[in-house]
Length: 264
Image 1: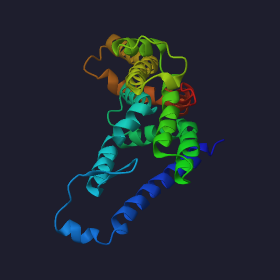
Image 2: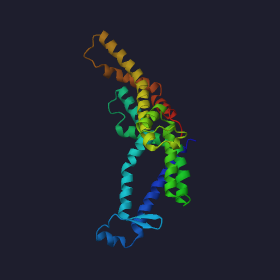
Image 3: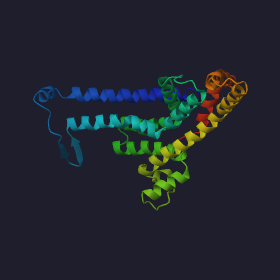
Image 4: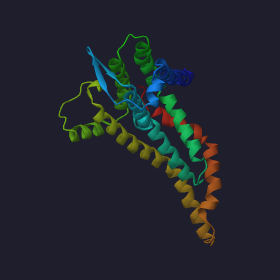
C-alpha cells in the first residue's frame, strides 16, 4: 500500500518514455524527410484515406506541442495540486517565516503529494486506457474517453454539489446527471477548481487561528510591559515554531490534507 505512489510514478515515467520513443520514431521513420525539411516545411495538409484521416507531419507536431503547452494547466486544474499549494502557502504566512520554506520546496512537496493522492486514479488510467491502447486493443478515441472519465470521476467526488449545480445552470444544462460520466468537462472542471479554492481557504483559516492567538498574546504582553518599540512578530516567531514542532505540525498538516480527498 505504501508503494502505490512510487508504482504510479514509475508508470507515468514509462508513459513519458513512450512519448519520447514515438517522437524519435516520427523523426527517423522517413529517410526522405530531411531533404524535404531542407527545401521547406510542407503545408499543413489533412488527407483522407478511406475512412481514416491522416495529418501531415508538421500538423502532428503542432498538435503535440500545443498539448504539451496546456499540460501544466491540466495538472494544476484537474488534480489535488491547487488545494495543497494554497494550504502550504497560507501555513507559511501564518508561521511568519517569510520565504522559509522557499517556493521551490513548497511546490516540490505539493507535487509529490499530488502524485501520492492521485495514484489510484493514475493507476486506473494506465491499466484501463494506456495499456490497452499500447497493445492495440483500444482505439485512441476510446482510450482518451476512458482516461478522461477516470479523471472526471475523481473531480466529481471531490466537488461540492452546489458548485456543480451552479456551473450546470450557468452552462444552460437543465438535465440531472445520473453518474459522473454524464457530467461534461466544461461543467466538472470549473466546478472542481472553485470547490478546491473554497476548501483550501477553509483549511487555511483553521491553520491560521492558533498562530493568530500566539501573536495576540505576545502583543498583549509586550504592550503591558511598555515594550511598544519591540516587534511582536519577532518575539512570537520562536514560540510559533516551537508549538509547530511539538505537535509535529508538518506530519499533521500533510496527513490532514491527504485525508480530505476521496479516492478516484
